[in-house]
Image (cartoon, rainbow, N blue to C red; front, side, top):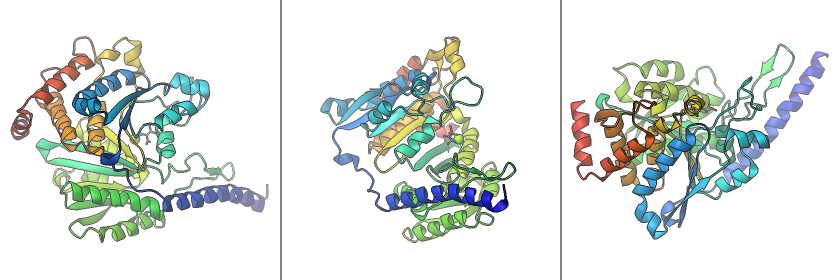
Length: 401
Ligand code: IPM
Ligand code: MG
């Protein structure tokens, strides 16, 4: 093909992407405000088991949430619902990353607690489906991926606000092979998409008494899109005179996160999708591994809370699913409570998880039959939550560590 034909063909594909994204910007402009859960009754909380160990750890997390919310369930303010069908078998049978009837069920819930779902990869025998996570983020417009990393004894208390719907992820499967040798992908950053995530980060800083926000980009090189993200950060920061902010480049940021002289200075960090994907794995590793971290995917209408690790099919095949550690799902559950406005309960659950999983560890899980089951751990956690001296115990452990 002659060059001009090749270029015309590529322009046509690019045109489709542009049209879709311009329409998306219009939708973003007319977006509703955040749901005020104090005015919603009943609040419907869905549990999605997912694959592998997912149903086991999700059930334990749900048991703890039902225990904490027992008064709200009794009064009818909160209703729990189990959502079936987001399994790899059912997704493969329907050839859909989220089958329509499952999506409809998910949309009847305000918030969901989701176990890990298997993402097919080449050669694993499953059809090549889009990740259920990425689909859910798009379908429910869950634009804020909030990932806390805390190591109290080292003074580390970070909250990452990763943008969840734009950047390389927005049209990741719509790139163009212009010729056999030239591949082009598209990176999407919008003013509206940047503003809502940066605003969420500053609002969180203000609400939680933090005084600094770090904005991470590579705006010296990726000038148009990261440049826009940074411009919007400057604009949003003017609404928050009590909060200082700094721009950092992603490369130096990956170094600063493991620099003990720097670690304590970061509080709330906000960043585009792909940088956020990478940096939050590094941060989780500093805390003890991706298995220890919970994650919130929040939009103005819906929110989904999940563990950030995989479904561990091997544990199921070897008959040890009941020994899987439900802590990450319970962390996600604590974030769910806070999101719904049950802040005290969320705080209690976080502290009980610190005590049971990091400090006291009277019930130890090994992932095998020589350790405790998820249910034993759930019981230990609930008795810790019940303890009237939970707060003092937690403070003592943090001091001693
Ligand atoms: C994450 C994961 C996902 C992502 C995968 C599973 C699609 O790495 O939640 O960070 O890339 O966002
Ligand atoms: Mg990731």
